[in-house]
Image 1 (cartoon, rainbow, N blue to C red):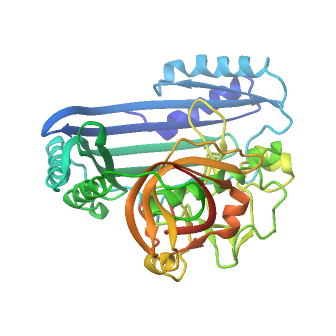
Image 2: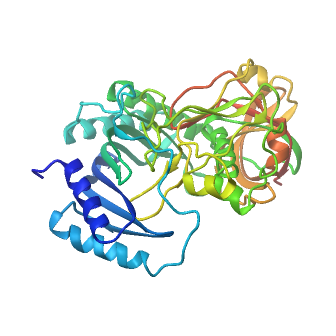
Length: 446
């Protein structure tokens, strides 16, 4: 493409206004994906792709419509603009529709966030990384087969522009390695995995370490039993404790609050967690996997304390849900090229506690250490919670035999009120939490 994409998108918005739109915005995403997967030393998958997606949103009065395309082609701009305006004229009015009034004016980039790594791995590099991970996993005594190991690189170039004067652009890179293996045989097989993904290659964990952890975790799960049914304390490994933050994110989403479909809809300003719990969303975290300089409506991002000393402090709002609630948007709108913006949190984390994971479990006579959860029966209106789980028994304050085929149940209101975090917070993904203990959970087992 010879022309500057920013100039082309500006031209598209101009065409939309000329076609009859009162306001418009456009988002353009160019993605490069390069990945390999190996299984038992053989190449199983090799991918390299480049895709372009363009979305144009127009407003005619209080009516809005979106059209999308797979190329930034100026010869199609008139058709796209005319089609979008024609669609907007026939859809129902939405009194909450419109561009974000709090959007930034002028141009914004990702300066200071360090989201672009110039290191670009070759296919040979990725292949070597994946094979190293698999070989390390298969070398663990007891591992019997491989589910595959993979390594990938991704690059996204994102541009957003509005007719109100905002324009922004940033690029994000990602590097990842994963391994999944099987231990045992016949009807007594178990599988587990490990992975790591970072913005910068230099921050990526060694592939051999990832593979070895995958193998060790798999072997440790061999010959599981079913725990007894009853009420027991659980301790959530950091791999699964982040799911609690996901449930919180859904419950404070402005769309759910406006519709009245959240179990937290009446809890603003109230104590929902113990007083030592603080949860933060930080889209400004340097090299954060979910970091971004502006949201999907052109509003500058900023750090928000979601829960402070156990008290719920804010909702996650885009401009539409903010208008419905009579509030100000919080700069967390997210969008694709074929749909409207919606609230979405990025770099969430729960601040750590003071106890080590060992100290957190020390007084548990009998409990469950959960390393994996599957399925989901979460009622967003009531907070009722039920999920399948696997992990290890806790006996006398230490990990014991592996367990599987159990269900953990409770209510998120009660679970939030009883959670206790350990001090082992690490930033490995966009949502991060330490080991978490929750007492008096219903366990359905044998």
